Image 1 (cartoon, rainbow, N blue to C red):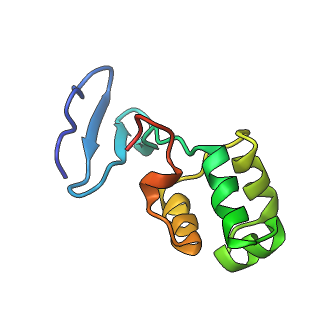
Image 2: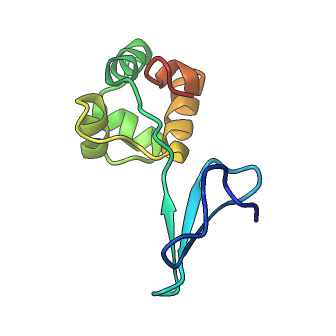
Length: 108
């Protein structure tokens, strides 16, 4: 465990980041809880839809193959929700594209 850059010990909380991880955690000393803060990685809904169409998958087929609920996929493709990084990796692998191909410009 390492202290994340830009984090300090304030108001009864400690910020840290696991080595080799992009997730930052806040340890709340008052409630003895560890709260993960997901990195702000945004998927490009249009790129996801185009990649799915290129493979010829319907939403239901893609959901079955990628082990992701088709309703979640609809929300991702319509910009209503943003998947977690592990889901983005799984979707990219199913579509045969690189993760960066599914991200909005400027996000990595």
